[in-house]
Structure formats: C-alpha cells, structure tokens
Image (cartoon, rainbow, N blue to C red; front, side):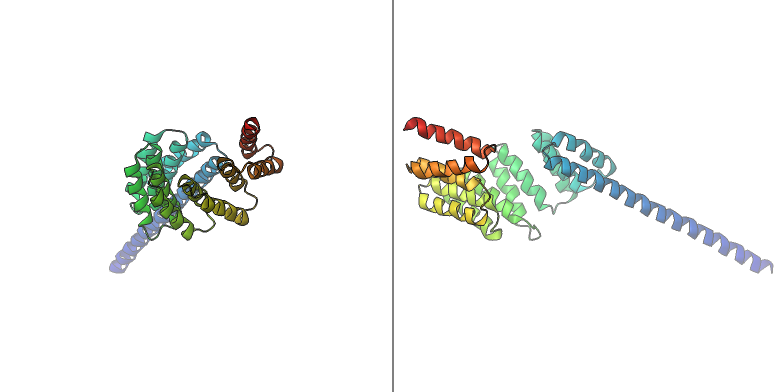
Length: 261
C-alpha cells in the first residue's frame, strides 16, 4: 500500500508539472498572438497615414511597432520608407539594411533601397539593388524594378538601354502606365516623335480618365510645332478638371503659346 501511495503521489506531481507547463505554453502563445495583433494594428494605422501623405504621423506608429517587434523585417522596411519620405536618407538606409539582414530574401526592400540610392545619385549601387530584386523569382512585382533600371539608364543617357527595360516592365505589367510615359519620353529624346505619340494615345485608350497622357501629347505637339493640336489638348485638360495640377500646367503652356503668337 505504501508503494502504491508513493506511485500515486509521483504521478500527481508529474501531472501538476505538465499542467503548469501547458498553461505556461498557452499563455506564451497568447502573448505572442497579442503582440502580433498589436503590431498589425499599428502598421495598418501607419499605412493609412502614409497613403494620406502624413509620413511624420505615420512614423510614430511604426516606431511603436518596432518597440514591440524590433526583429520584424516588414516593420524595418516600413520605417525605411517613412524616413525616405521625410528626407532622412541615412536613417532610411540603416532600416533598409536591417530589414535585409533580418530577411535576406526581400526583393521589395532591395527595390526601394535602389530607389533611394538613385535619388542620392549612387547609380551603380542602385542598379545592384534593382538586379537583386529582379533575380528573385518570388518577387511578385518585378515590373517596378525593371522600370527603375530603365530610369537609371535614362539618367546615364543610355536611352536605348532605358527603352529596353521600360518595354520589359510593360511586358510584365501591361497596365503599368508610368513605364509607358517614360518610354514615350525616351522616344522623344531620340527624336522618334511618332513612336512617342502612338504610346501616349494608346494609354488614353487604356486609361481614358487619366490626364497625364493628354498633357504629354500637348507638350509633344508644342515641341514639334503642332500648335493647334497642342492647344486642343490643353483646353481639354483645363475643361475636364480646372483645379487639378494638370490644369495649372496646361494653363502655363497655353499662355506661353499665346505669348509667342
């Protein structure tokens, strides 16, 4: 009987320990889950403020998220984007590098760090970053990086190379209009005005509500002496959305044409 009692006591103690460990494990899981939810909410608030062009307000939320999850590569990446937006490039670089350190396979961070290098005039470093992004087969939006490579080559006056990468960007994302605009301007710089005109007109067919291709056409017509066609496009822009930045630009161009007549 004494032996049986001893065995029962030991089993009871074992079950209590298991119960404590299980409770601790569940508690830890709940804490981790709670932290993740807090980080998610803070990031969402930050994203919302960024979309509304309020980067400094967004920064406070991303910093709070970093305090909770300093080793989250997405938080580090988002901090880099905010610092880039508020013109703090050195701090932005630190966070881009930290994001990549935490997640070496991070094409979005490479692409955005490449943009920052390009803004700083460090075009070699920019190309290295963009190429790392496009060489990642899991990168879901490689057309951004291809477009950015084209922009770098355009800055370096290598227009044919720029055109090659703009075309690749369009091939991957046929609805990505910024690549079309830059492709058209590249053709203009080579004097291939017919190519540029065709591209701008094609964008109007795809996105008829956008005023950007109308403004680009108006400038092209003005630069090639087709004043009546330029005036037609300018008046269309002003009449469509008189308070827009496009209308302001159109008005300036229209006034310059009228002064020269």
